[in-house]
Length: 565
Image (cartoon, rainbow, N blue to C red):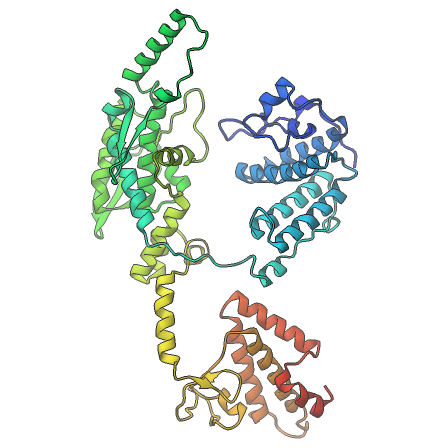
């Protein structure tokens, strides 16, 4: 592949990364030894000061190809995805910087495969610093970047990772369980309200620091853009006049300010209101972030309020639902905006950054840092919405209603938000075992509750507790959710189907016992596979073993004797 090498100063993204407040950092740091492992906030400064030494010319061609690849990606992909891919690529460079090796277009494929094998080994040994799924995703990112940049055919680069093996070992695909008792959510909600109470308009524009009084009695001081007194720089060798001017200027900024000079302080109030809004409405973060500031009116609706824009300026229909208890908080926030911005503003949540344009996506990091500095525990908005959805599911047991409230389909809600709850699981397990403690082993693999054999609904076969096949048609028969069970059942089906094939062609096989047994076994195995992805994988593995004539020990001898298995 022939590609033009770019100069060091042509490796930036100012011309294509137009969404964020600052563009993606130039890839020029990949030309330098140790550049990939340097903090991105400081890497340009270190490059300019010469702390990273001289660029390695042999790296230039490959880095140019990576830069061209990411330029193309900006045309079709989200900024967040590209940031993640660059982060993965930096990991590869960091690893080979430790070995003092230069990645080039000639050796990058071999180096990637060696890196993949090493990372895979760390995952299997439990020595990896990241989770197995994160390592798998990072490995895939690097492979796709190299393939895309060098325009290599699919499959040429070999990864050492196997997702099926990760799932088999229980390292991936595990369902997260909701173990929260909502205490964290309640504490977070109280912290948000405490911040809102502290950051009134008078406090935001008045004397600093602003004191946030938390529910546990602690007080946290917020100084805005000013340093706290204990963090002020020492006077050092500065003249007395410069020291005096500095303290006068600082004191002037501390005593009062306006909307422009106190933008960072006002943003804290907006952050708190935004977090409260998401918690109350359950709205997706992106549309909530872009809500316009309109003349909102509340009308009663099904125990809560429907909020609509009266004569919206942009001509679009704005509507969302709120709980009745939230109405007073929401209206108080609207009054705050009207007083702070008498000439109006474009957004319901006007995050202002001096000298920068509004970010394309909401970032919670500033508000989270405020809480952490005060010794409080922040909760991400994703986690907050998950807790809200799971709480509503536990209270209502109505997935369709909850999905509608969460603005998702039922499928999306179950996949991305709903989590098993250990309180409910403990209750269901105790109920299950209470019902099944009298269960005993069935004649066939599985269990049954001792009782008179009862035919299954719609079954023409009379069950009994003597023959294994008699269990199949009994109402009390219960399977076991394990691989050994489905392997045994698949082997038993092979045995019965082989008997079925021995029936002479001259005889009518429809309705024969062998056909009924085979069909019933198919039904049991299909129901088993539909229980979960794990059961489906067990079913597929059992079928594969039968195809390879690897039979379960319960029936292996019988098959070998009767059918020369």
